Amino acid sequence: MTEHEHVRVAVIGSGFGGLGAAVRLRREGITDFVVLERAGGVGGTWRDNSYPGCACDVPSHLYSFSFAPNPEWPRTFSGQEHIRAYLEHVADVFGLRPHLRFNSEVTMMTWDTDKLHWRIETSSGTLTADVVVSATGPLSDPKIPSVPGIDTFTGKVFHSARWDHDYDLRGKRVAMIGTGASAIQIVPAIQPDVARLTLFQRTPPWVMPRVDRAISGPERWLHRRLPFTAQARRGLLWGIRELQVQAFTKRPDELGLVERLAKRNISRAVKDPELRAKLTPDYRIGCKRILLSNAYYPALTRPNVDVVASGLAEIDGSTLVAADGTRADVDAIVFGTGFHVTDMPIADRVVGADGRTLAEAWKDGMKSLRGATAAGFPNWMTIIGPNTGLGNSSMILMIESQLNYMADFVRQLGVLGGRVALDARPGAVDAWNHRVQERMKRTVWNTGGCTSWYLDANGVNTTVWPGTTTEFRGATRRVDLGEYDVLRAAEPAPGETPAATPEPLGKSTRTKKVEAGA
Image (cartoon, rainbow, N blue to C red; front, top):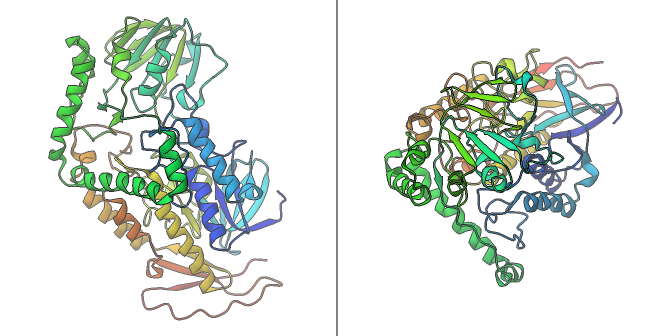
């Protein structure tokens, strides 16, 4: 990149959101864009998370783009290596390679009010863009808790999303910190090889059986030859999950039957009543994400595994001390403690029209318009933004809905013509956020009696969407210009054609003029 490079759109990140945005831009006839990626390859969280046993807990045929079906999925729930290979395939098939800029971590994005564009500083150079699509994702920056004495630990320490494949765990005493989606896959994968495994469990998860199997050759042949069969399979998977939404969002008491099934799952695998009591949650199932595994509970019953029903409190040399006083000497610590979801680091690197960072604008909690745009940050959009997460279905469905919104956003800029920007109105953002939070009040995520990563520091659920994917798709199908201020340069820049006067936008839309920069 050079100092003077300018593009129509800059996409940040090359996971599902970033690659999906790139494909959609090309389909809209826009080729003047780049995809900025801090690493050396595509894949996002499926590139970074390569820990033993890593796999998806959403069925493969639903965890893929509708516009890029994959008849060759090897399993009903595919592993990390297959998902990453799928994303590499998408980059190739849709001709995205020329747009990819690897090893280009964004260090700062600043809105230029005069020139109506974003100045983007990266580790490989600086460029400007009319529109920024931030697709960094909420599961991109690992969170390691600040544990007193961690600097005194003499062994190996790493996060599950930064797995050290050069360090051999065989024969080692290993501590697993956390019991989330990563931990329940890591524990059974490493348990047979380690000398001793100590699981520090602050809160037990609800775990249901994983109905996983290899997809047969005849099935794959059928999906290749008759694509509608794969579409039907995807539709069935989607429909089942849409029907489940009511229980999560409106009638959490209906989850009681699922809870009884989950308890039976524990009883079948864990015969020791003391261990079973440790592993049985005391909150409503669904309050935290329901996890899927056939191997987690059996691994915890093995002779070389200890379950500490308490969080890690401090570290003294090679000794880990739990909040309940339990002590364990270990050689390695694996943190499965999640990510910066409600405090995404990228927010510190986005400076809006009034000079505030996005982190400052969101200091009292993340909020956006339709999960995509934020007031005071013109021509900036996010994929998987506030309140777009799901508790029971595929995030690819939500991403594709946001891609519809992104496409219409860019389309509207073209219709308006000239040097123009759209800035979400604060009132529109507040109104949307108010509706979302009102609906959130009766969901299992807010009433289930747990503390989850869905909640921010103020206890507000700024992560999950309290409805069906169908509802969200309807809400993001089109950009309503009445929810935006239209910013337009007062004069064209030197050598630029004067902007055409747009059609009347209606009473609810204001047009703001800004002075042109030099």
